[in-house]
Image 1: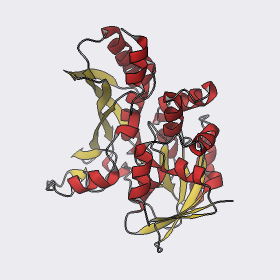
Image 2: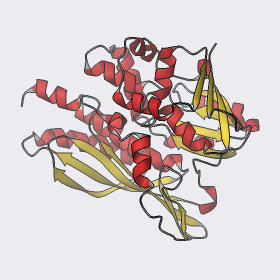
Image 3: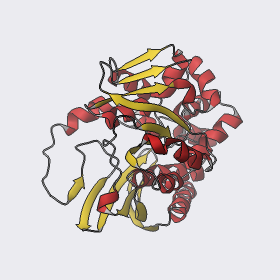
Length: 345
């Protein structure tokens, strides 16, 4: 096969940049009738990360799935990233991974060794998560897509919903932003090796470790930051009840992403995120490049945690020990005219 063709396919609209925008998706979901079941603790009403269904008073299952086209050229690394991204939804709910099923779309005329590398990368992340890869489903397609359907478990009283934050809560982000911008720059050959390595390290790191860390504290809300960007996912957390104040100098990001944003190495998904949040965000002395980082769709992004103010510093110090850039980026406040206020230096 022509290696140059592989590179083009593997770097075209991949990762969470390929997802439908929040506005479009919301319009569709509004038309679907809600199903009633008292044991369904969390469905799609709150745009949460996964569904939670109670089996017993002391046991519930968390169910989710996620898949997308490649965003890096290496099939093995792509498999790792796609799996880490799918597994992340279980951790964002506070659950533990039990089983996973492969979701595969692959061209019939391609070298099957490529598919083998993708699935190997994915299986190794499932193993690292402590889960069992139990099967899957594949279809022939014109382009590669890969991901997982994942089942986890959790105590019904210990679920991290994404919309239960409280006034005064501190907001912690456990991974750096900018992976979408870095991958965009890499597709056109402009990303440095160091920047891409940092992005890959972040995207292949399981949120298992951050999730286990924050369970020691009084967490009121949690989500993982993916296709809707930091501001889009924070918007979902706040609902119609609260606003938030963010401090841009506290937001962790891959440093090269700032320069690449200034060169307009941007994604259409980021612009959809910006359009969706129009009128809901007020930037105060924040440069354009930082705005783009805050709207940037993340693939296998970090956890955004809303927790009791008394626990903020101790929790942040524990998360720092995991080794990735992280930060206490803001505070949940009473509802104001705007949903989110971002303050610069």
